[in-house]
Length: 233
Image (cartoon, rainbow, N blue to C red; front, top):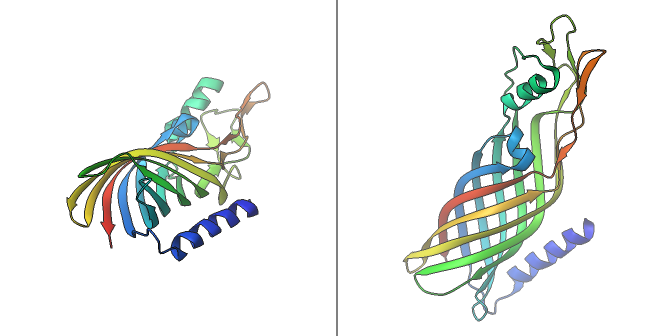
């Protein structure tokens, strides 16, 4: 991880220190995140915001080197837990309506490769960096259900608030549309991956003869649909 961080620092330093072929640009966009896979089973679509800086361009190869920071938010799907209990224990759950959240801050560096020049400029992009997930709550321990009333679930001591940082990666496609000499609209979609854990192994007990154990859930991924602007200066 330290070696990877050193590579990112060297890349950023090189970008800012280079004057040849430089064409500085500011990238600002907002959009919506769509969770994928098991992450999409337990978390809902949420908002996204990102700001990036192009400090170094290679016009001959149509490549921009980009450093960016993004913020992404998600809400927990209460029905996900309720359906787990119903499927595995055959009972409903009452009084379960927590307001759980998860948020992701990503700091990445990578490239945006232009497919053409002119008013409409399709591109492909890829980035690597750090992904920092914060959880207002996440399931992490034993959840107890009353044997006399299996629908009565106690979350006491079964959740935690905290954060994790892991390797992040993103790959996307988009189009820049020029609307002024130094201004373009930016439309795109991007696949995001984070190497963190968002739910640990936990158990739900109804009684001594009926129980189930969940698996650890990790490596959340989501797709971001975004719209923004590219400002040349």
